[in-house]
Length: 180
Image (spheres, rainbow, N blue to C red):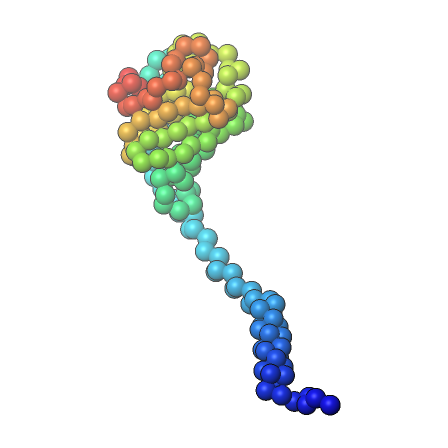
């Protein structure tokens, strides 16, 4: 009869035990990472200058307003300015550029450039040349008041040649394009 305990059998048994131990260690679930602490940005009031159409729809009325802004990034400041712009003037001097209850345009900032996505409902506004100019230029002047170089407009998240058929939206607008 052969011997049961040989060096070769002992080595095989040790390898089997080591393999089972490694398999058990590898198949163990990893520890769940703890979530990072939630940090909300503070909502702080910020003084902004907004532009609206005058009574004759041929110039602008400037209104200084304090609006709540969450954080200090230029994108959040710009979006807060557009929310206030869509609400219209509070002091009664200027005219609202879009009807009450209209959607607020979205805005993105890339460097010194603003990209404004006008809602498709704005294409249904029954405005002439001066009305369309007031919408485009009051937005441009409001956004470029604090910082920025130019504003490029999209309609419904798409590049559009015009909003209402009068103004060219294929190029960016600067402060000089919207002077009184």
